[in-house]
Image (cartoon, rainbow, N blue to C red; front, side, top):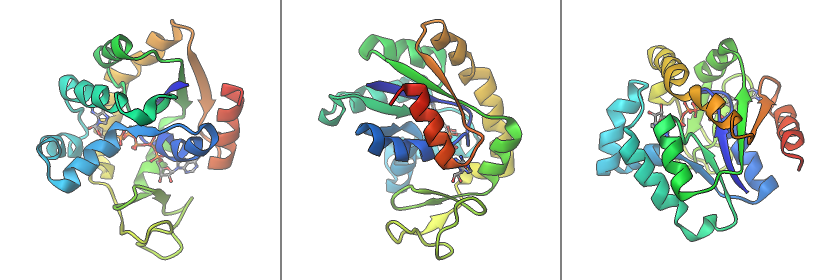
Length: 209
Ligand code: AP5
């Protein structure tokens, strides 16, 4: 199944994707994670994306579309994929339709106040990318990832100003995708407000798995 996870920053897309990988046996492809890995490695892509991401803006469509097209051509996506954070603009969605057939779009439904609470407390493993939260999902040892022992840090784009900007960018450029995909009849809505285990149940019910 070719799946898209759509929703505002901090809706829990990455957290649910980590669970959905086991449920659906599909690879999780996160454009944000690809950009962060490139930044950590100091590649030309990472250098280009760094300032843009820290300001809460979007990387340009041409770069992002090219990156996803290459990723979807790899062997592990033959049986489908979970695309998290792409598309984020109408031109990205139109480009994707030309090289891959999306079967379902999962819309993470969540109010702004919950987003702010989640992003304000998010911590991430620098090594494996696992998401933690200072209240809802603390690592057993502060600053250390439970899964790989990596350093747990605060993302640069989780600072207050960048969060506000990301929400503005989401409303202006990404939210129009809700109508775009709903009109195609492939959208399912998931209530993303409850605790993670309940969101997993909501997701399974919405997809009928
Ligand atoms: P990206 O990494 O995609 O960021 P995002 O969409 O802003 O999403 P987040 O990772 O912030 O949130 P999430 O929904 O995954 O929530 P999470 O599971 O972490 O993109 C980053 C940047 O890269 C963009 O701003 C842009 O610059 C660039 N970029 C990426 N894709 C691009 C594209 N297509 N085009 C152009 N530029 C692009 O959860 C958040 C927190 O809440 C965590 O702490 C988690 O533990 C906690 N939590 C999650 N679920 C629950 C729950 N149910 N209950 C309680 N706590 C929960």
